[in-house]
Amino acid sequence: MGNPDLSRKVPEANETADEKSAASDRERLELLLRATQTLSEGFANLPPYENDTPGASRIGEVLNATAERLKKSYPYFHPLYAGQMLKPPHPVAQLAYALAMTLNPNNHALEGGRATSPLEKEAVDQIAAMFGWSAYLGHLCGGGTMANLEALWIAGQLAPGKAVLASEQAHYTHERISKVLQLPFETIACDARGRMDVNALEERVKRGDIAVVVVTLGTTATGAVDPLPEILKLRAKYNFRIHADAAYGGYFSLVDNLGTEAQEALAAAGQAESIAIDPHKHGLQPYGCGCILFKDPGVGRWYKHDSPYTYFTSGDLHLGEISLECSRPGAAAAALWATQTLLPLVKGGEFAQSLAKSRAAALELSSRLRKDERLVVPFPPQLDLVIFALKADSVSETSALSRRIFEAAGKRDLHLALVELPLTLWREAAAGMKGDRERITGLRTTLMKPEHLEWMGEIWTRLMAAVADVEGESKRLVAS
Image 1 (cartoon, rainbow, N blue to C red):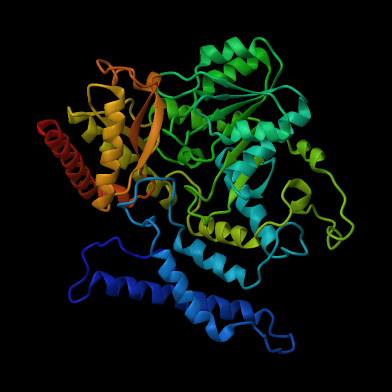
Image 2 (image 1 turned 45 degrees about the vertical axis):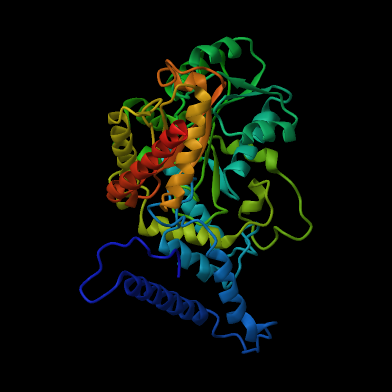
């Protein structure tokens, strides 16, 4: 049940790691079975019926075939996977999701999500409280893209035809969404650390005609945090709307080991007009769980619509009446509620401490990389992403070496990611290199799992072995 437990910590005497993993899976399945029985008791008054499930006799066969196909995946659950933003859901989220799926509730309307709609409201209340909000409008959605779409849609309703501004390193979804909404979209230059350039932003906003400025609190390429406190000062001067895209970095507002600039920016997120955050990233949830929050509950007027059959079982507000999406999985709300009940979103709590380990892992890796004269790190990490490359005579050669290190590390079961960034973000690192390309391909590690800190020694050993492989290959090519 859940992600495979392949962390390979030292097993107890006479017990292998595989045996411990199997025992853990059995324990989780037993917990789910007991919870399913508890749920069934709530419907014991119903007359029995025979569930005629098509293909029931072949389910085991197909499930095993599915498992065989899934073996082709990368080991996203394991500490040696440090590539893309894939974090395993917490076991309680997996179990609660599976439990709720026996009902398959739909949180669009209270009739379809009679139990899970209140769970969603409670869970979203807890997320809003993390940013200091008690009166707000918000709900879960399919992910960060949908959350950002709703934020830009509201901004467009309030200022039709005016422009959306975002940094050059903001997520590409903002430009695509703006095209869908038929809103003008413009990018603002970044500074040398991948953050929105405040001076460039001021030059643009002083001209007016702005619907919203998207402030990214944790870019997906580098983890850069835009300087929200300075942007808030510009808002006071030029009067524009701010949307905080905290899809990746929002939960870091709970940790205490950030740098001053990132900490102050995240602490100010509650001063934005809207916030997007993704529980399916650092919130330990299965995919399909994003969240959008609006500071002004009055924006709900833009969602107003009628349905001939949907909203009549209760006079209370239905979640579908404040969402652009219609059908939404109530199981996602159950999983999030269960996780936040087990691990409350409070500073100093278990959840925050676990997240702080990811940040500590990034600091440790960055420190090790900077001590190696063969490697370059363009800037220190602000969250838990680390960017680096191997030095070479030219930008193109460094880029080629990054790809080879990526492949060599993969052969050693260390899974990283590649990232292409403009030379402006590698100013010091690219000094002395022949500038034969406008962008450098580097390596990116996303240290999302708290286990990454404990495994840093093993990660480093495998990374250095991959670098040695590539260096040795390069010397052989030169010699030949």
